[in-house]
Every structure is written in C-alpha cells, then in structure tokens.
Length: 322
Image (cartoon, rainbow, N blue to C red; front, side):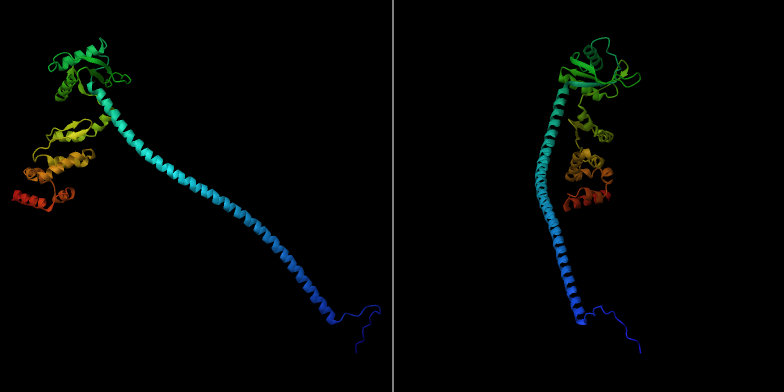
C-alpha cells in the first residue's frame, strides 16, 4: 500500500468544489460586465466620431448644394447672355455685310470716272506734268473717237514700290473729267483689245474697279472664255453678274452643260434649263447638241418636266432619228 502523504500542520485545507465554482462564475460575470461597459464606451466614442464626420459631410454637401445652385444660376445667365450675343452677332454680321456692300458701291461710284492703263513704261511722263502727258497720250491713241483732248483731273501710278528694270511697270490711274469720254475710251479699248500701242509700247485700258469687285469678276473669267469660244457674246454686268442672251434653240444646251462645273453661274444655268424646257421644239432643231445628252441625265437634272413634255420630247426625237 502506498504511504499517506504528510502535510504541513499550518497549511489550510483546500476550498470546497462548490466555492471554487461560485467564484469562477462571479469572475466571469464581472469580466463580461467590464467587457460590456468597455464595448459600450467604444461604441459611444465611435458613434460620436461618426456623427461628427456625418455632420461635417452634411455641412459639405449643403455647401456644395449652394455652390451647384449658384453655378446652375450662373450657367443659366451665361446661356442667356450667349443667346443674346449670338443674336447680336447675327445682326452685326448682317449690318457688316450691308455696310461692306455700301462701301464697295460708294467706292465703285467714286471710281466711275477712272480708267486704268497697263503697259506704259516707268518714268515715261517725267518730262511734263502727268495730266498733260496722259491727256496727249489718250488723244494719240483714241483721237479718232474723241472730239477734243480729254480733260484729266489727276493721274498717277498705283501706290506700290517702283519695279526694277525688266519688271512689269506699274499701272496708271487716270481720272477723266467727263464720264461719257471715259465710256467711249473703254468701249474702244474693248473693241481693240491687244491692238493698242503708244510709242510702240503695247498698252491696255480697263475700268478701275475696287479690289473686291475685281475678285468677284475674276470668277467668271474662265466661263466667259468658253462662251466666247462657242461664238457667244456674254456680258458681265456690274458688279459681277453674267448675262448672255440665249439664241433661239442654239447653244442653250451647250451653255447648260458648260455652267454645270461653275458654281458662280447658277443663274445662267437655271436660265438655260428654263429655256430648254420652254422651247424644246426649237432646241431639237440643233441635233448635234441635243443628242449629246442622255435621257437619264435630262430626267435627273430636269425633273420639273411633266409626262406630257417627256412624251413630246420622245416623239420629236423619234421623228428626227427616223
């Protein structure tokens, strides 16, 4: 048998099992309570911080709401101002266009008595006063159509740098006192274009148009050349309006085809098209021009023809071909 252990006489006896269990539950309950209080405190602190942050966010959102409202208001005001400015710009653009046209018209009227002489050598007039020299020059060149030497108000070279020897001389602007004399000179210069000479120097005489009018009239140069080649005599009315009297049945199809590639000749093209539609019987008497066109092209470009017109065209084409 094992020997019983000897204990110290002054050592207390161990606590009963029931007392140890009670103390353990109490300590656990105490720990739980302490943990609950700690968690509650943490939650309160966390909620306080969150509430503070939410208050700040609420203030920021409120400030942003006010700012966005002001921005929307300013945007509305800017839209209104832009609409007003666009309206004013349109009005100003229209007024500017009208004023430019008026200024161009006034300048053109101011230049009605002017002629421009091209081809005279530089310094040819240095021996005497320019108005006297150019009056004698015009008398020598156009004396056969003038009753007396033309009166010149003034005359000068165009204001640009003097060209070097061998370069093209500057043009001369002459202001004639009488408008009818100026018209006579211009007509004669057009009739003898390329044949005028002064002291063996070939010269040309033109109207003195403003630069804007010159640019507008330049757009018709190519089409007028083509019309002249076709035996027509087109006229370029002031400031830049192409006019050509259509012959009866002849050349109207050629003009209509020619003006297809020139946007500046839309009115002449419409005029030729209208003439073809209204006088197609006369047009058909020029078969070498009419047969150049296909019916599909006519139908596409002249969609205003009604069924009766196309029927009559077909009948006439059948008669001509048979």
